Amino acid sequence: MPITTTFDKDMNLDFTVQGHTRARTLLARGDLAFPTYAGGGVSLNLFQFATWDFVTIAPNQSGYLFEPDYTNKKIKVLDPVSRLEIASDTALASWSAVRFLAFAH
Image (cartoon, rainbow, N blue to C red; front, side):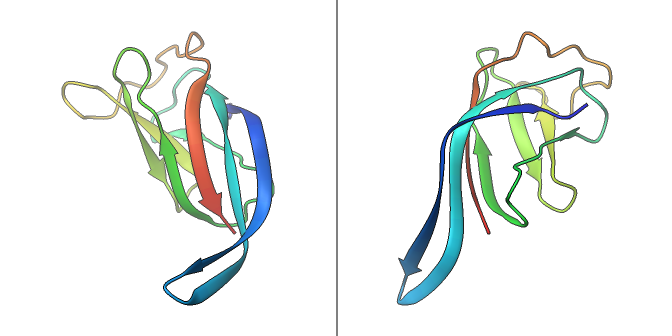
């Protein structure tokens, strides 16, 4: 089951970095609500984003960390102490309003 995504705002922007213009760069921010965790990560669908360039997710209140898997478009959840991936079938339904920021094209 994928992560539920609620967007604050998404927009199409043209960015210029060190003299190079990147057209059709997309920016999104919002909240994520997690389902039961599956080993290897939970699918994150950012709709119109064909390629993720950068995704960051704020640690939740318990300190769990999030690691994007850019190739498979999944998010891995890491234990705050061991920094290892949490166990499969861990219930995460109480995790709502986890903030994210993404750049893509």
